[in-house]
Image (cartoon, rainbow, N blue to C red; front, side, top):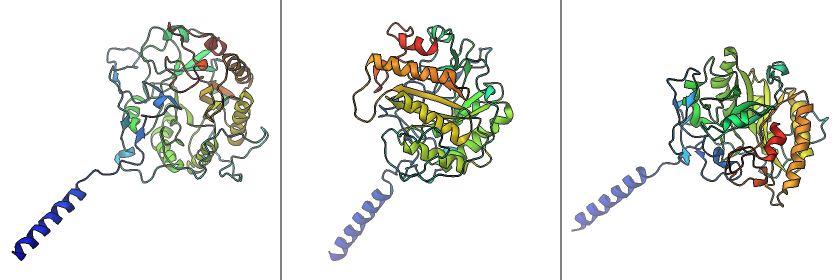
Length: 370
């Protein structure tokens, strides 16, 4: 009897051990979770993770979107291997960062500012970025729609991107810009972004944000070197990853430039959400003075994420006027993409809407796009 009880105990222990070994494994640290990104529109509504097929009959070689829905979580390890760590800034301050005066040429990499050496990217003449003279672009998560033509026809609009490697089938003469959003888009990016597909490319989307492309500066540099840097030899103009306008964004960008030794970077991109247009100007100037490269802003809005009151419609118009005058009059500021040309701004002050209910430009859109 004792032997029988001992046998039962050993059997139960074996089952328990097997259950522990076969239980759920931890999710990859660089999995992109877009299910709760109210601040930056869930990877930007429909496009960021959408998988679309090539339009085999299109003479333009561009892609036609699928009508499939997006899953909220996507796992696609970079280079078929498991990244070693997730990005977590040593400076968790999420409040809008107020840079030093515009004459400063240092990027600060800690809460107690200490300057880092100025990086040495390989620049391209500023005229390459916006040779048409049109400095405004559409962040377009709306796929193939007839009303794209209305926005594309505005006199100041020269560019379009979709938070993905894909572009609408017809971009009405605009300059299309594919993006390598993050790890989950590598396969699509590789198959689409080849010589002749476009002339510009955007780096990763808010890699300093855990809810966005989420990677360390060194991993971002590796991604850039493997998939984006070679496009320079195919005639592409390479625009850096775009970080948020806070301390973590500055930290990440400084680390990226330090780790991306020998990289081709033609322009530096950023995102800006705040209610002070002068802070936008100061931040952009800081980036330009630090990296000595042309500047792009690929998302911005008059939006408070610090818990304060949101801007009124009149204040949004005033913000837009100041920013537009700065962009249009500053030679090193190449392209600006206001947020957002979409029906649901998902957490961003709706006074910033650029798309009216009847799918025409709002009066604010005319302020930017002419």
